[in-house]
Image (cartoon, rainbow, N blue to C red; front, side, top):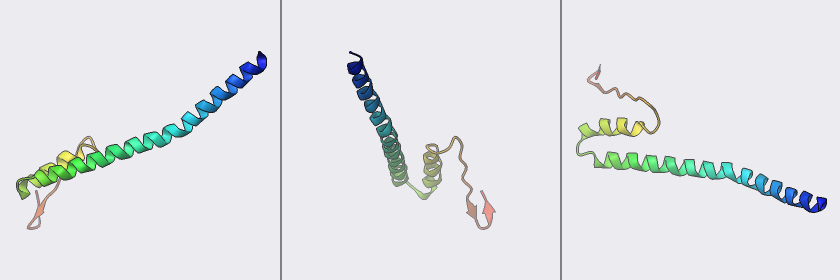
Length: 81
């Protein structure tokens, strides 16, 4: 009985190790998919901009996926707006 217990424990530990090795790869894949989705949504937002004036707002809105706050400075004729 003792040997069966050790065999079962060895199998359980091997399964746990395998899952732990796969988990970071799965998480990395999920994060990569989320980033790709976010970039695609940002590009679609820019495509939907009805005019050039709508583009800065779309850029700032898209940046919220990457930062809590964002700012955009426009320089026109040497002046910052």
